[in-house]
Image (cartoon, rainbow, N blue to C red):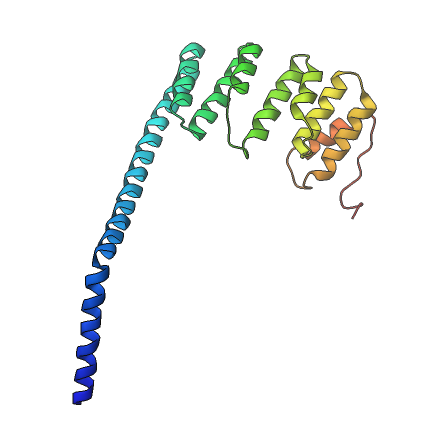
Length: 212
């Protein structure tokens, strides 16, 4: 190795030492923050995992109460899940409770359960559709239509049609059913029922293959 190379390496080493002396504290602080961030993330993951595990246990307890037809205890379990901000578990438990309440003839309780759900935006349309279906079934077609708002998905359009049929507005209902049918996939399992509703409302159904 040449002398010039050794001098260059020595000079570079001194520059590195000098830079470290000036910036060492900030580097160590940055490392500490990074480690702290990692530790914080790991702690949050552990807490979230423990929270979900606990929520799952509570959810299973709610299902057991529902299986035993103990709606009062199931309702308490749903409230406990909701208080713990257990997201999807509390939503699913509430939906199961509402279903059991309907089956028990407690429609008003079911409506209250559904309306109390604070679901994520992507899950909210499902809740609104459940509410609207129940309103139609309990003779509150006007409220059902309001609950649906301006939704244009197939399920909402179909429920809108059901509400109009309940009001005796057959032609308007047919229009909603036909719109719903157009937005529904050809292979969708609920298509046959929707086609029946169109025909019951005085419409005709064209074979999807013929309209292509």
